[in-house]
Structures are given as C-alpha cells and as structure tokens.
Image (cartoon, rainbow, N blue to C red; front, side, top):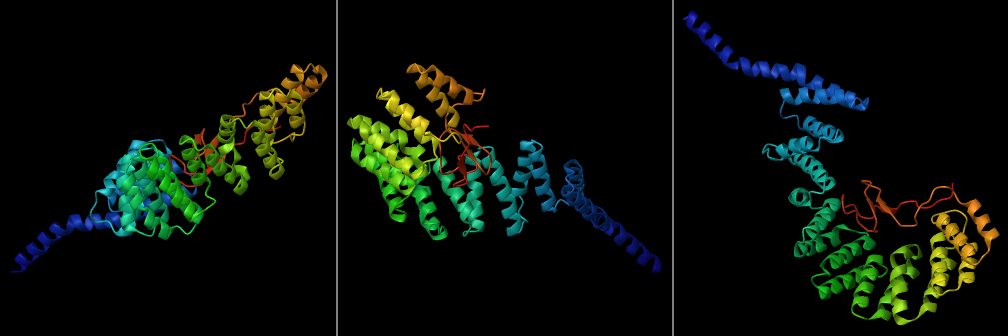
Length: 380
C-alpha cells in the first residue's frame, strides 16, 4: 500500500514538474530581465534594453509591455516591418484586457500613420473609438482617415460626435471646412453647405472663408470672393500669405489694380515688420512699370526678418535698372554670399514633415494646427 502511495506521489510530481519549472523560471528570470530592460532604457542603452526585453518575452509571452517596448525599439532602429509585425500579432490575441488593447492599437495606429498606410490605419482607429468614445484625438484622426479614403458620408457621420467632444469652436470649424474642400471636386453644392456650417460654428474661420471664396471665384462671383478673402485679412492679418495671390488675381481680372495696392498698404499698417509684404507691394509697382515707387517701398523694408535677403536683392536689381550703380553697390555689400529663395515652406511640429503648401492639419500624422512656417531668408 505504501509503495502505491509513493508511486502515485512520484507520478503527480512528474506531471506537475513542467508547470512548476515554468513558474520558477518566470519568477527568477522574467521579472529581472524586464526590469533590467527598463533600467537600460532609462540609461539610454537601447541595444542592451532590446536584448533584455527579448529575454523577457521568450519566457513570458504574456508580458505585453515588453512586446510594446520591443516594437518601439525596433521602430527607432529603422526596422519598421519588424516593429509592425510584433504589434499586428498582438492585435490577434483574445486574452487582452481593455487597457492593453488600447495601448497596442494606439501604437500600431500611429506607426501606420507615420508610414502613410492610411487604409490599414482606418480599422485600427475604428477600434480605438469603440474602446473609448470620448477620445477626441482618435476621433479626429478617424474623421481624417475617412476623408483620406474618400468615405465622405462616414466622415460626415462623425461631425455630431466631434461637435460634442470638441469645445474649441475654431477647431470645430476646420472639420466642416476641410470636409467641404475634399468633396468640392465631386459636389460643389455640398461643399458650399459645409463652408456655411463652418462659418455658422465660427464666423472668422480662415479655411472656411478661404474655400468659400474659392467657390465664389470659380462661379464667377469675383467680388464676393474678394469679400471673403479680405475678411480673412481683417480677422487674421498674419494669414495674408494664404490669400495674397488670390486677391491679386481677382482684382486683376476685374481690372482694379489700385485696389491691390490698397490691400497691401492696409496690411503694412497692421503688420509693419513683415518684409514679405514690402516685397509683394514692390512687385506690384514693378508690374505697373513704376520702379521708383518700388524702390521707395523696399527702402522702408526692415533689414532683418523673413524675406530680408530677397528684398535687398530686388532693391539692388531695381537700382541697376535705374542706373544707380553706387546705390546698387551699397545694397550688394549688405547681402550675404549665400542665395536663398523666398518660397514659403511649412513643417509639422509633431512629426517634422515639410510641405510646400500650408495646411491646417498634417497630411502624415494627421495632427491639427501643427503646421508652422519654416524660417526663410534671415540676415546673419
């Protein structure tokens, strides 16, 4: 009888041994490896941290945070596909809690955005707002992804939710204006309705006034277009780069050249330190074949700031045309050896993307109001 009991105990031990062994390994190996990985991260030793997180997940495949950190480290190393494969595999798990799911989907979604895989990002952010319906940022991104993938009706369906979540009326107007801009090629009437809704939400909305002005111009209502664009200059004078060429073209079409000069003079009264305005006004006088007026304008331009180099270069050229060699030489002495164009460039403060045309939302990371003007010509 005693022998049978001993045999039974031995069999039970053998059956439980793998479980006990794994539990022991987790206790003595996983936690130290994971902890060491965190320490290495704090010390900036990313390669050593990567090794430790690999060890941690090899022993405990349920260590989700270690997987997330591994994915981010691979991403930072430039191993994009490897990072994505880790995250994509994690999304297939059915034993995750809500918090773990959100972290995985959030990281994967951001990586998809940064690699411009918008079609793949779409279902990820659909899932994210199911997990948290009050998350404004993710709702904004989903709205933008639906527009990028031309699901305009679905984008429109999010506007009511965004209206509840977004307390900033100015930002809320951007959603309507941008949706209008994107549908304008297919349905101008619907686009115009979105612009009206944007202005109802926020009457001074720059994109709404801008795009509505474009609508009027395309419909041949030039005076109404100009009215919209000049309203932007009244509300936000520093937004003038967005509308200057539009206003010039519309006034030229109407044969009202003097009106353009009036616009720039009004702007200079509000923002006298903006060198680009002096250049723009001087270019108009040059087109009118009034070089002395152009020279007088450039002579008043600030010596430093955006566009200062180009302003002096233009002043030098005008002096040469007028035969004022000494004055041209004096201006040349003020110029630096390097040459820079006066073309506007814009960059996203969030992801660093550089674009040629201003946008209220970064086309890559989809963050709103992150686009800022890149410093252009400056005096050394």
